[in-house]
Image 1 (tube, rainbow, N blue to C red):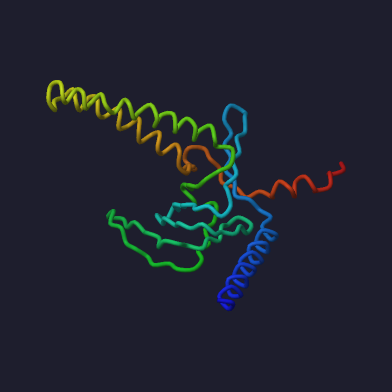
Image 2: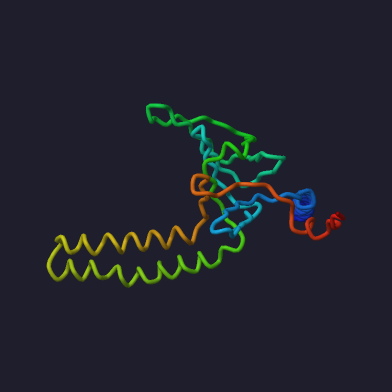
Amino acid sequence: MKYILLLLLFLSFTIFHSNAQTNKEESLLLAVEKIKNSKTKELLFKTNKRIKIHTSGGRLIVGSIYSLVQNSIVLNTVRSSYVYGYSGDKKQVHSSGKDTIMLSEIDWIKGTVFEDEGRKVAGFMLTLVSIPAAYLPLVAAAWGGITGTFILLAIPVAALMSTGISMMGPRKFKTTKGWKIKIRPELSQLISAPPNDY
């Protein structure tokens, strides 16, 4: 029992110490930016959360631990990536370890970002509204059987519910929709940086 306690204490110290070291070394943040009507909207990705990246070459890469180097993302993959051939068939490429993805190669990126609570609340409200609305097709089916009315009522309710659920999850940013993926310094570095004298 004493040895198990010492082993658990040692493991917890090792894990805490390694996390503390990686947090000290992290000085760059992954961000997306969109300029619309001369207003810039910038969202920062949360660190140590799962991200999905789809490249222009057709690869889908999923991972949660990544580091940022100049204009690229070094991602520890948790799932193998896929390559889509010219004929549309999907070939699995087993890639274990690290993948390096240039920012210019990314078609879309999906992940959890800061300052996105409004979108999540709206998704929760849509889902909450669609639950009682889901009884409308059931009432229509009970009233007149499964007919065209059932289908006409079921499709919007299902769309409303799936939209609400997708809004509560991670967010997808497509470069074709005007989002620019970039790497920026951490906020604490921006605050502590000396002002430029002109």
